[in-house]
Figure (spheres, one colour):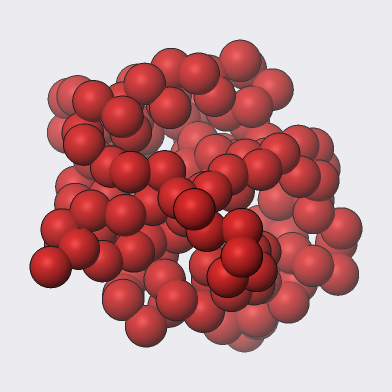
Length: 138
């Protein structure tokens, strides 16, 4: 049974022209891209999207960063999509990420780590709905 996950190619990766290279890895890992769009989150949108981290020390830095430039949001489909995407992107800290993962290849720091991935099936659905209407998921 296929499932969906949500991904963001973050402002650092877009700025560093890694979007196409990351897309290539998504496709080669047999994910189906249901929808994607290039956006620039407002500070308010970033704060709302990352509300779960509101009480964490990195919240302001994270929301500033995520609203600092363009990013690509994606809805992806694959068997065990959340787990498979998280394996493909690697550890949050690129220094701890395994060779061959997206973060090992493209992240520049813990704070600018190239991509976002949903951490559960439930959050994947919430995050997809935050950025996409059902009619946009092809």
